[in-house]
Image (tube, rainbow, N blue to C red; front, side, top):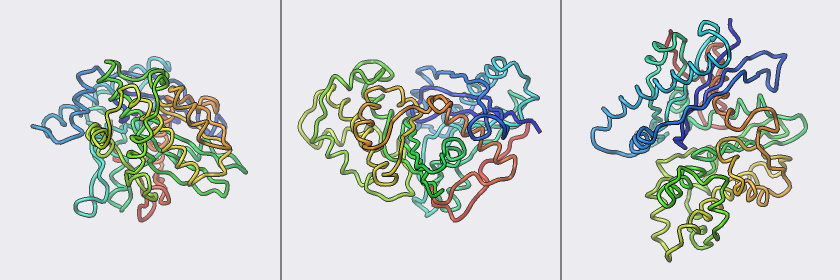
Length: 373
């Protein structure tokens, strides 16, 4: 069986698709794996806007969601083509593609006690276009088993980043922030800790016409509004005990507008500074509560490139060294895509991909569904 898997990830930041080719071999690299190559394919603005709109109820959304899934599969297929060319391999050398899809709704346990999680995708089309087996729909099996369906990366984080005799925290700052605590006793915890790039990018887009605050420079130029920050911190999600997960269903523009309406007017620059502080505070608070003895906090996702947020994390995570996962041999933009290659491999090997202590599911479950080439 081929040791090469492809992982594809498009996250809540809506910036595009990250893809990796991963070589799994116990003799190489951290966690017995090596990223052979990585590509990033950005979404065009119209498509990103449509995906964002599909996060909330709107006209003809079933039709539009189906077409968006087709479009996403085509972007995925282009990313696979880029990966194969860049790695100098053929499609027949790849055992399977792990394709996460684009989360547009995430409501586990709600409404009818089961709830749902919805990732737009068309894995059948992706298999047709690439000629490679596709594993998709990773979250649903955990949700129907009573779990949150998220986060799913902590098992991968343990395989790659755990250190004997130390507690290590791994923080992913995508659209939403999530924390993995790799405790010294071998226990693994993981949960979503709050908003990250989703709200900061939204505010930067509407006030500066830019997709994100490069390096956090704009946020760093502002002043944290302590009253606004306190209102945000009072949201019940932050005090809720794990297992817990969240997304744009909660932390969205309407949530932000509600917070702004609850007090005096705040300058746009200061709102950005306050959103950056909320991101850093939510992550640091999660570390202090659940991994206070962590020797280091390894940061991945686009937020690892936000120098201002990284500085604030370093100040708030007392006693822990904060640094990007690049320092551990896995660049911050490759971690989540590599995790879904790892989950695809787990599916192929008929191994559970969830951690009960993380998601709260009733037991270990094999995650995903196969769409043969």
